[in-house]
Length: 88
Image 1 (spheres, rainbow, N blue to C red):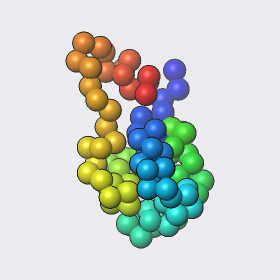
Image 2: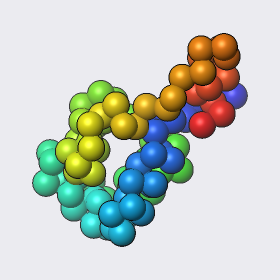
Image 3: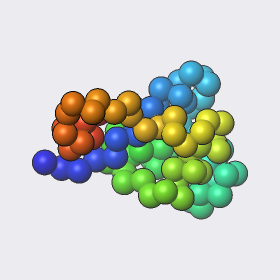
Image 4: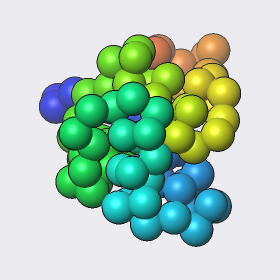
């Protein structure tokens, strides 16, 4: 099973709520400190193919004006963690 980031959907949803393009979010990420953020970076985040480290999570939160916890999925304590991460 290919590992993917599990915040991409939340990032895309928030970007759409703000009515921002991927280019605009890339500019906001650069303003927040993510060097060389591009539209392709945002695309890879949203499709889950770019793994996100903790620092990048904070750049996303600043750029999208939300608390970092916003990106974490709700936990269903009756299911294994792996099943929840890979089903996102």
